[in-house]
Amino acid sequence: MNLEIVVLGMGYTGIPVAAMFASVEGFNVIGVQRRSKRSGWKIDFLNAGRCPIGGEEPGLADLVEKVVRKGSFRATDDISVCKEANVILIDVQTPVDENHVPHYASLRDASQAVGRYMKEGVMVIIESTVAPGTTKYIVKPILEEFSGKKAGKDFNLVYSYERVMVGRLLLNLIHMPRIVGGFTPECTQRGVDFYRNIVKAELFPTDCLTAETSKVTENTYRDVNIAFANEVALICESLGVNVHEVRRFVNSLPNDTSDPARNPYRMMHIPGAGAGGHCLPKDPWLLKYGHDTYGSFEFAPKILIESRKINDFMPQHMKNLVQKALHERGVKLRDARVCILGLAFLADSDDTRNTPALPLYNLLEDTCAEVVVHDPFVKEFEGVVLTNDLEDALRNKDCMVIVTRHEDYTNLRLDRLKSILAKPVIIDGRNVFNPNDCEKAGFTYRGVGIGTQKQARV
Ligand code: SAJ
Image (cartoon, rainbow, N blue to C red; front, top):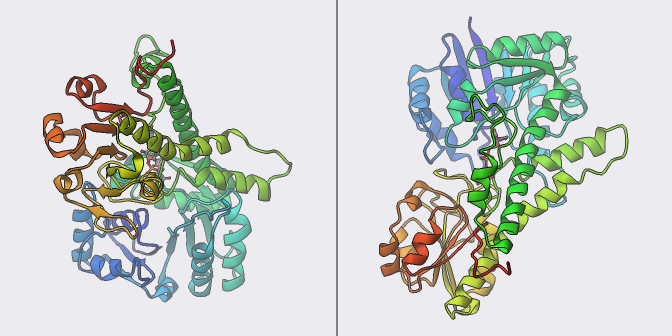
């Protein structure tokens, strides 16, 4: 079967999905990317067979090179390529603004452009994460207005969300079950048949609204569980116990005693320095927005909002740990020289979207004598003193603060650290070091959720 496919948005979702479909025999894929100051460079980069996504991303760079050389994938900023397309995927950014309201400028622009060029019989698929109700009440009317065509009659409309995760983009795309929500059952079936070309896992057919709601609920579920773990971590610190031991014991309770490892009901998440990324910090607000805007009755969600507050508080808590630890070493925060390890929001990636390292950096930068950030993958970041040279970052600093669990940091040796740092002080936001080893080696150690008897009143 020959198919002309267009993917709008060459980001962490658009690039892997475009490359995967371009690897299917007979499929020809064009990636559309605006020639913006921030992302325009990706077009020529991709057409040179190179993958713009940094960090550890198994298989993606090879696949991009292969499909470009094969001639089944190219990138452009010319949106009019949509006029030849049988299938158009929309993978643009859908952030929320400072009032937690969805900012749909890219989605509206993309929908207008697709509407202007799309042909009869095309299938339009939204993959971006959106508030429940967005496909029906925002995208569909725009597509119909600009094309003069009717959804479900003259073209198919589908909402099918991505489950990608940096560091395993292709793996999740191929092996994660996928939910396919159609505007009509025919739209759903065509969507399912289409994804069957690349997805080896189960495909769940449903409608657009249920699929939209499932996506933001899936991420909100994770955000709420992380918030619970962070709240327990704060309690453990005040009690003087180690949250990671508590978590190990809590997660040891099997549901199925014949197979203890299989424990679907109790899976306490991992507390830490904060929950960043493009998804978790915004999807709870998209869920709330959908309910507030398209819901049929008033109800104020509480858990998802309080959870966001707890997760957003963790950078402040990290700063408090820095202050307490330095105080123990007789260093005032205003005189302190601090090294933050990790700018990316996730281990071994270069993705800095909504990273919890930034609010911590800003909090410390306002008070300390010097703050420098190290990251092995992030090459530049406006407004942050950043280096890729670890020794340089640590030299003569009064403390090091771990925010991202990059592999490189898990191999750091305490004796080496002691010889580089001015003061042996470690603030651990990702449980990288063993507190007892640190204290035995003469360090002042503070970790999220790591309480010591010294601190506890009990
Ligand atoms: N985090 C914790 N504790 C945990 C897990 C994560 O503090 O136990 C932190 C991480 O350090 C990071 C943030 O949360 O700062 C997000 O981490 P993540 O592992 O959720 O990474 P994302 O945001 O790239 O991936 C999530 C995933 N969603 C779910 O697992 C429900 C992924 O499957 C989605 O595809 C992705 O969001 C998305 O694009 O929506």
